[in-house]
Amino acid sequence: MHRNLRLFYILLFVTAAAAGLRYYSQKTSGELVVFESAAFALEDTTAVDRIFIADKDGNSALIERVPGQRYWSLNGKYLARKDAVDLLLKTFRRVVVQRPVPGAELDNVNRLLAGRAKKVEIYQGGTQPEKTWYIGTATQSHTGTYMVLGNGSGGIAKEPFVVHMEGFTGFLSTRFFTDESEWRYTGVFDYPGKSLRKVEVVYHETPRFSFAMEVDSNGDFSVLNQHGKAVVRDTLAWQNRFNHFKKIHLETFNHHLSPYGLDSLSNAAPAFTMRAWGTVDSLPEEIHLFWKHPTMDTYDNEGVLNPWDGARMYAKFNEEMVLVQRFVFDDLIALPPEMY
Image (cartoon, rainbow, N blue to C red; front, side, top):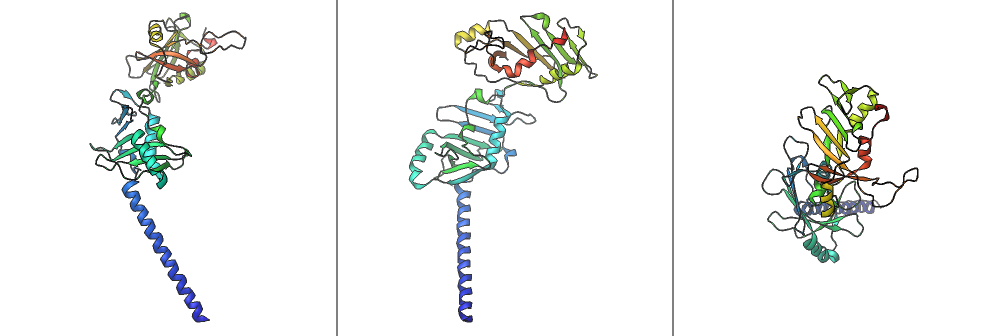
């Protein structure tokens, strides 16, 4: 009886040891695979200084870190959207392999990657990319993305994977776009802290409503009418209005105008002009606002047909025609009744 019990314990120990050895072998093998062909993630994204994205249609975007600046550069011409750059950096850090591509799907996935994959080069200070990703389409469940790594010599790894990001349900390919207008920083006024010194709003259709707000070197706040004369009113309401100008964005650089419409609008008089000066600026940032004809009929509370689009306006900013949201700009151009 005791001998059988002792034999049972010996067999149990041997079985456990064998299982442990098998698990360790599989784990080590898995780690080797991840190291060689599935190491998509970057541990230190603070060292990333350049990101190049290219698609199969010949479009590309080059985003580069600018030392000492809050915003990265785009194609050497513009500022890049901070939110879009931050999202890429977070993706580089948190991306993980969800699973290998099943053998039955492998040929089809490889064809899709070869035909439509976006190429993403990630640099960390050198002339050669630290990582190169080839990003394909989403899986049928839309919870993963087919991806394969570059092999460091201009080619690609032999095995693609289904990749996702921890803490996120969805696919990743839409984050890596190449349209320059989508990448561009949309800030019109950007004055953090106490760096905004003066704001001016000109009502071209009704000039007597034009006004300005400014803070002098002593920190004293004042409101000026169209003649530059200081008016004393509810200071708190005006200071709140002044603060709204500190961070203003346009909606999109895609104005959707035909060449004829663009030419006509460029020669038209604006309805409003807004200017803002920072504490160290001698010249202001400036934006001109134009009414936009509605895409469908809408009516006010009295049942009167609205002559203009209630959602958007056209604007000229840095000599470009853009679209802005009235949700953002209506509060800036509306005149508080207590001024006059």
